[in-house]
Length: 223
Image 1: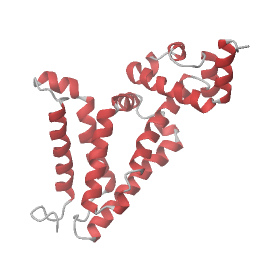
Image 2: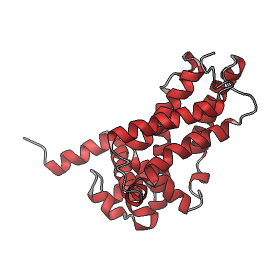
Image 3: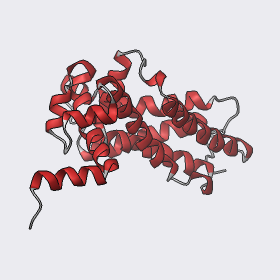
Image 4: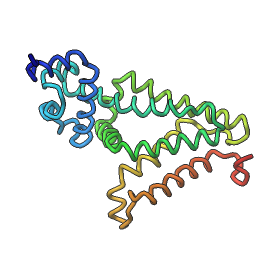
């Protein structure tokens, strides 16, 4: 005799809590990025997931805790993808270029992440500051940049005296603006910024600007 659909669904949720939580976080990401912390509703998140409102509270306690976990999941995703770039096996110039291009493309492909970061800035980074995980994850990308930069200096490609945190700021700023201000910039200047050919040009420009900034000798960048 076939199981009652409701019973079967409940059993699946109990047997796969990680999948249920991932589903909740994916929907929460869309809701928080579109409506902000104050505008998002647990009722609406529950309606769009395989979980009940009660189950969301069971896993995440309250809306603010869910928001914090959503932030953590968003940062964890980008940092894990950065770790897969395998930059240690590339020459410094190529490694830095790959990191810049990855950051640019990640932001284009994940506008919800950009909006979520903008919302957290509205809250002055208050929730982000509560997360030891996010602090650790973001320290990791600075460690990666420090390693690439140090190798570049040692091998005579990069100029000395640069701060990896400032370099990360530069990469992030150029890539972030491309998404955060895309609609206003396109309308103000009557320019199809999101068009594929324009995005390719902008990615090339960002990579070139960062490499020009760090290179020891622009006239002979390949040494």
